[in-house]
Image (cartoon, rainbow, N blue to C red; front, side):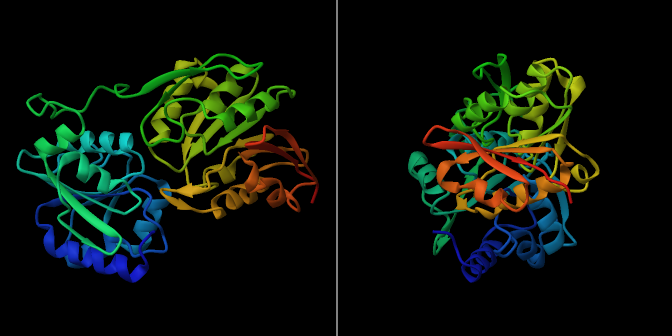
Length: 365
């Protein structure tokens, strides 16, 4: 269960009295919902003058609106590569993503610094407490906070605290690389990081979408909307060498992965990677012949079907008459119904019982 607005407000007000704000250099937010009070605003009102790092473009924009005086940096790394003393981090979904974040923070942490972690009961923070044999520094309702010194943070990340970890790893280190071969398609190499959608292996929905899409004739300009590590975009660029592909995502951890993926496959010259929340000012200036997307219906641990509806609606505006939108999702989501009224023709082109692929063709006017 997620906290209500008043519960979240009280939690962060209490946290601001416990954390030494004079030493707090970074606050990292990732999936924090827009309908709940902004921790950046609450901590700013209490005297926090450090850097807010936002792991999503949408979170960065939201934070700038709600805490206009804050220094906000859009970066998937919790301290944006900067040296840190005390840091406050929103604990991400998934153990591997949390471990990665802890290591990144500890690499930049002062020897006497601390990392403070916050999350709700569904975030996995309680599991970390049990694994480390620790108790939360405090909790209110469904929210809890845990602090770790540098040595404990490194051990939690599976690293030797005696190692020299002050410097960032060279670019490219830390990517997990794997290969995928969609039916009828090329072998694609993918680079990913914890926290990115389907980061360890190809997801079955995207593979179903590719198997259906690769049976069609290529089109000139393509968009992989919500690209994750770049599986869809890189596969289409490899299979259709005359096409140009744009890959975009709101999650900033996905951006270096997608760039690395197109580089690994030798298609970087025909691919552009864009960091943007849905269709924003960059994509609105472009037009595409075909858009492919596997839209999310979760944000962090929250179910949010409006995300897919927004992406479908925005996609229709980017297509010319005759342009196509290809959407894959769990069958029960019935994305085809959302496409009706926006497209002249909508059909289900594949359905394996778990996932379905819908195709919409744009009409005139």
